[in-house]
Length: 360
Image 1 (tube, rainbow, N blue to C red):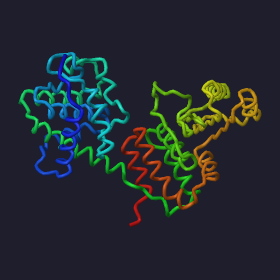
Image 2 (cartoon, rainbow, N blue to C red):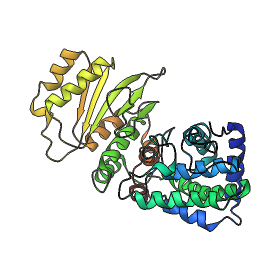
Image 3 (cartoon, helix red, strand yellow):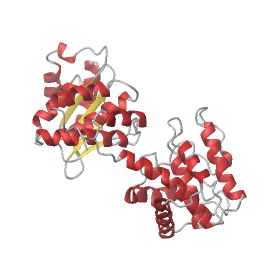
Image 4 (cartoon, helix red, strand yellow):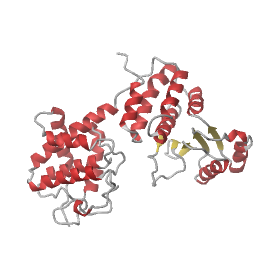
């Protein structure tokens, strides 16, 4: 069995590294440069938390092998997943630094979850390999040069400066107060359906619009195998169970696919089902005028179909209890946060923010 790192000690060390990062004096440029490299668009999202947790572990105990994945590999290894889940992730939220990866267990993912040690990892996607080799060689250097706890803490602080920068950028409040609702709806549809990451942007848009009407809205990560309910976005009751399930699709939907979704909503005992589809080539489900009525009668659910982003947003905003100025000021920022939550590419986040320049 390897090394067990006390969570309270790790939290104290992480807070000290964060304070050092905020002060920003004399931090090693090597680690700043590496942190920026691992945040490039093509770099896997797991590599930033992997770097942070390895440096944190070494800053807690100089005996730690920074190339650890699981603690059973040797008497010098620790569980990097446990340390990330128990300390790094919750404090990233509390202190305010962005790990690039979202979710509570960013290291329960490729390429780490099936291996015990970095030395065992060979199978990688071609685009990921250069980043992984930089990460691995940097951690090998930490061990070869026998980094002290303070050296590891300063390296971690350097990495955190980049994470803090990224967090500040995501928290930028964008304001849409100079435009009317109709313009906001049209502008949103044009943005969501162009550029990259269209499926993620569609889902973020639906979640942000529902935020204008429902007090508690949950949006799952794309292709999340652990989801408990049908649909991509859910309006929740006070007890956390779904009141409404929304399926968001960026490709054509057939009547049969709509029925399959309504059936799954019924099986999950969710009373309301909605479909939001925006896709070239989609044949309107309203060409079959009895489709929705038949499904409601057959399954005992309320079924709502919206066949464009603007149609969905217009319905939501009409029935929202928020007044016009509140929608105009809060939706752009809410959309930004929902996109960040679902890991939309940074270039698209920036493109959205630039649509709503600050008005000083």
